[in-house]
Every structure is written in structure tokens, then in C-alpha cells.
Length: 116
Image (cartoon, rainbow, N blue to C red):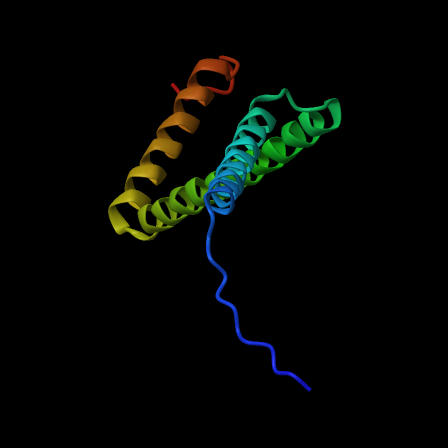
């Protein structure tokens, strides 16, 4: 049995050109993929995508409205609670109510019910 001697693979001019062409084709394919992704981003969405986008944005707006209204209502209730618990407010509101009742009785009561 004869042993074959190891041969070194010598790069010829054509193999170097072949490798350059393959690298260039890989770069070109990457550029085409990037271009395809950009074109896909620019294409108008389908009718279903538009409907879903509108639905989801409506749901998000609705949730935001509910949360915002809840926060504002909570702050108003807290402020009203603090005002009602203060003694000055209770005195002021009782005087306003009694004055309104007295004025309405004086304005609308028949003359025979009014005091002289």
C-alpha cells in the first residue's frame, strides 16, 4: 500500500474570485432582506389590521378614561370629606340652608300664614 502524500490546496486566481463572488452574493442577499423588511413596513395594513388597531386603541383610551375619572373622583371625594368634617364648613352650610329656607318661606308663603 502506497501512502498518498498530503497535498496543500493552493488557492488559484479563480478560487479567490469565486470566494469574492460568494461574499458579494451574501452581502447582496442581506441588502435585499433589509430592503424587503423596509418595504413590508411601508405597505398599508390590511382591513383586519386596521380594525384591530382601532379596537385596541379604543380599549386603551377607555381604560385610561376610567382610571383618570376614578382618580379625579377620589380626590374630589377626599376634599369634600375634609371640608365636611371641618367645623367652620358645618356652621357655614347650616346658616346657608336656614337662610334659604327662611327666604323661600317668606317669598312663597301666602300672606295669611306670614307673621305680622
